Length: 138
Image 1 (tube, rainbow, N blue to C red):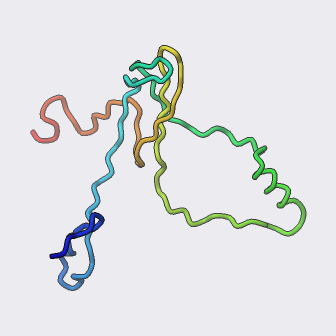
Image 2 (image 1 turned 30 degrees about the vertical axis):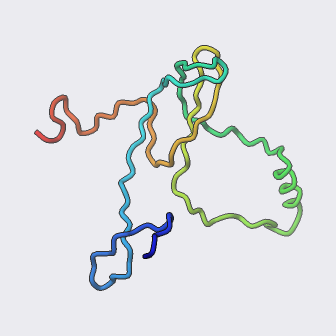
Image 3 (image 1 turned 180 degrees about the horizontal axis):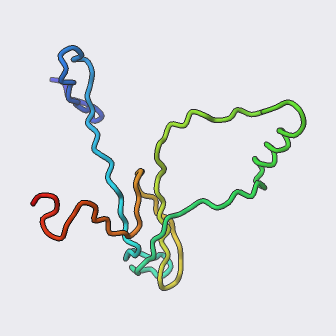
């Protein structure tokens, strides 16, 4: 008998009779990610669990003084137009969310990446379409 290798996965064939060779992979709808503004988690400096303040990490302003930027500016100088290729084929539609955790006791900061998502909220109560009792099924 033949054992399936660990990487072998079975997939459901497409229901249309005209294309039985096609494979249908089901995708789950992307949910809104809602994270509380404070989180009790481990602090490396205090060496124990402490309440942390949670915020979303944002990249800083580019100074243009990095070696690659200086080399690129020097190459672009003068006549001759664009010297290096400009990237156009963007594949991803989302970015990975990075949380910045700051310890409330010692103010030590650390970054924690979470999954990719299109909708991200930080500590808001989204009560869209819900009443106090019963929700939408009444």
